[in-house]
Image 1 (cartoon, rainbow, N blue to C red):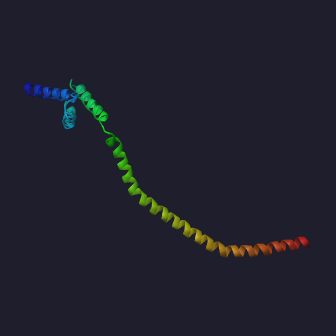
Image 2 (image 1 turned 180 degrees about the horizontal axis):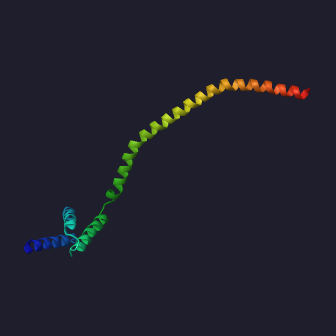
Length: 138
């Protein structure tokens, strides 16, 4: 049992050393990162290798963020924004048109209802004013 534990320790230490190596390819870095991320939860809490493994993973993340090309950090958000605009633009246009149609229908209904009520109101007002003027004159 002691022999397998020591092999595991040596394997983890080799992975930690490879994480800090700047001469390995991106694919190998991804493999080391995956290996360390897989091993970390399995180590258990009271283990001396926990912090070195966490530090190695943090170092890999830092190096990956430094080595990102402008296409990676700028291209993805622009692509997401373009796809979102293509999906939402027709929906917003459709909703806007339907709202304008409903406003136009309400306006037409109010105008047609207002014409019949308005003519009655004008007649009654004019006759009411003439009656008021007649009372004042007498």
